[in-house]
Amino acid sequence: MYEAYWKLKTRPFENTYSEAFYYPSESAQAALLKLRYAVENRRGAAILAGACGLGKSLLARTLMALLPDTFNPRVHLVFPKLTAEQLVPYLLLNLGHGTSGSTAAASPSETIWQLQQVLSENTRSGNHAVIVVDDAHLLTDHTSLETLRLLTNFETDGKLDLTLVLVGQTPIIPAVERFASLESRIGVKSLMRSFTPDETAAYVTHRLRVAGSSGEIFTPGALERLFQITRGNPREINRLCDLALLIGYAEEIGQIDADQIESIHEELVTVVPE
Image (cartoon, rainbow, N blue to C red):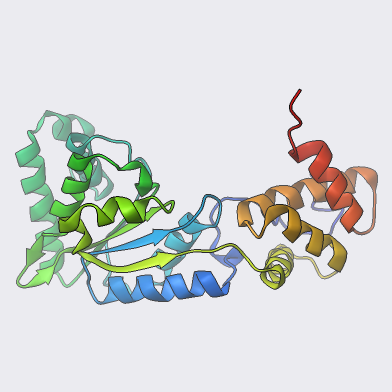
């Protein structure tokens, strides 16, 4: 809607995944380095944790895109509330084996055996599977965590068949630490943090440049106020910046300043109780 007005090729603050829009903050780069170490050295599992809205899923997808070709298949599970009995059939489907009808009819032992055979064949072909479980903090019951631990036991000819990457909010770390047999399989734990003021400004500029902007749409004061309001949370930055571009287009202003950021936040974002 507002792209032509601001001379943009695309909307810069969408929350959907795009490798080009990944911003290499210090926290994100440190986490990415640790996760690559865990995967490329075929560790059993790794954890990526952080508060809501920090870009954990984007980082996980960036990780998958950077891995060498031999780290395949790469599966991103986004429904962790499945029961332990449903998790393995669902994983098989994502690996391209079986159908919803056949896996649903099979017994738990049969689906685990089938999964083990699939992963073993994959390892013998010179590959290593990578399985990302998003929103893993929702997996709090013992049976689900036990199922994940079971997956990290699969190995062929002395090589682990897969690396499990648990992505979730910070409660995932104490939840796993209370489960000693899974904790022992964790190769690395990475914690993402909010942007600093400088990173917030650089993040906004980066996304605008990728979207095609060549000018300074947000004033330095606007970027400073943006950090104060969002506390460096990327999802909140995206929401406020997107609204600012929309309102700026509607009001035909040339640049977005701190007062406009404040006004948009108060009128369109903040919920005032009755």
